[in-house]
Length: 243
Image 1 (cartoon, helix red, strand yellow):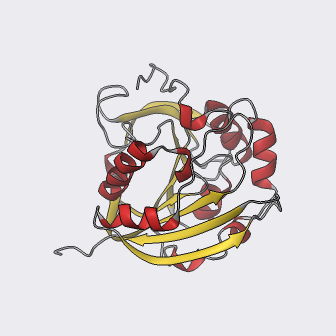
Image 2: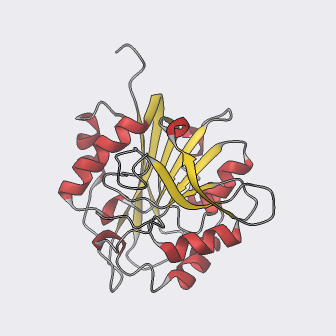
């Protein structure tokens, strides 16, 4: 995967269809409240201020809500059109926006794909209420471990090999006893998108191979009321230090 000097990724198969529909998708995401989308898993989120990684942050709805609760939030969004809209909608929220992508998350993990120093190269919302400022030298080393990693409607976009690589990357970014919370979409695939039929059981089995253990599982109907669409919600926990 190549990252340009501005930190913009080439279009990946897993994000197909999102750039073209960015405006419509942002309206859709923002039409449902954070607490409603994550009703089943809110108890898994850190009770005290912590570090949160929102992967596939979309419009920034969840990232902004978590930042408002006092968390230090990094929002990873590989689609430039969604990042731009998210920064504009939630300007001043104090969210750190990063142009990076699963399965490897090379910028966040400092693998030398960005500017060669593990720095992110994207606009940052400083939380000052003045919008965004250009920064190309922000060191991500302080974000290497997260108390919560959130993947909302992301995992089923990855193929089997990508899911295996991604689970390892996520496990490496999780703080001791941190939690990964993810949702899986089941049902018809929208035209122009790439999704796979990924089960909760399969995801839990993969997580266990990386030292992650299930702490929550639930099923629910689609919050947008789309026919034939349902969701699985999973919570995974890392092992305590010393185990």
